[in-house]
Image 1: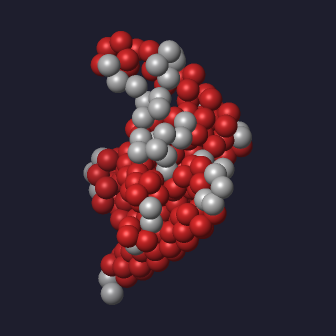
Image 2 (image 1 turned 180 degrees about the vertical axis):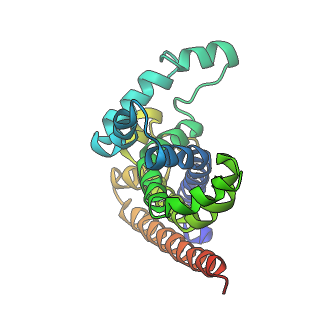
Length: 232
C-alpha cells in the first residue's frame, strides 16, 4: 500500500495510525473510570462531569482546538508550566495531534463503555460485594469481563474518530508535513494544489480501507469476547 502512495502521503498515513493508536490507548483507562463514575456514581457534580465529557461533541472542532491551544500551548495555562519545568510542549508536535484526537474521541469512548456498564445487572456486583470482595475486585472480576465488548466498541469508535479528526488538530498543531500532517490534513493540503486530486483520492481510499478494517477487527474481537463470556 505504501508503494502506491507518495512519500508525503505515506508519512501522513503512518503518522495518523500512530496518533490514533496513542490517542486511543492513552484515553482508554481514563475513559473506563469516567464511564464507571457516570454509570454507577451518585455525587455532586455528576451532571457537570457528564456535560464536560460530551462538550467536544457539541462545540465546533475549531473551538476545541483553540481551547487546547490556550491551555496546552507554550504560553497556555498548563502548557507554560510544562515548557518551563520539563521543556515539553504539545503545540505543533505530533503529541499535540494525539491530544487533540483523544479529546475529540473521548465522548464516543465514554458513551460506549457507559452503556455497557449500565447494561450489567447491579445485583451481580452486589452479590460479589456481599461475599467480601472490595469494589476494585468486584470491578475486575465481575464488571470488567462483562463490559469488554463495550470497551472494544468504544476503543474502535475512538480510533476511527481520531483517524478522521481535522478541525481541532489543524487549529492546535497546524499542518506540518512529517510532524503534524495526518490523513485528513494531508487530503486538505493536496486539494489546495493543482493536480493534487489524484493523491487526495488515494488517501481517501486508504482512509476507507483502514476504517473498514478497524470495524471488522472490532466485530471479530467482540464476538470472541462474547463467546468466552458465554462459555462456548
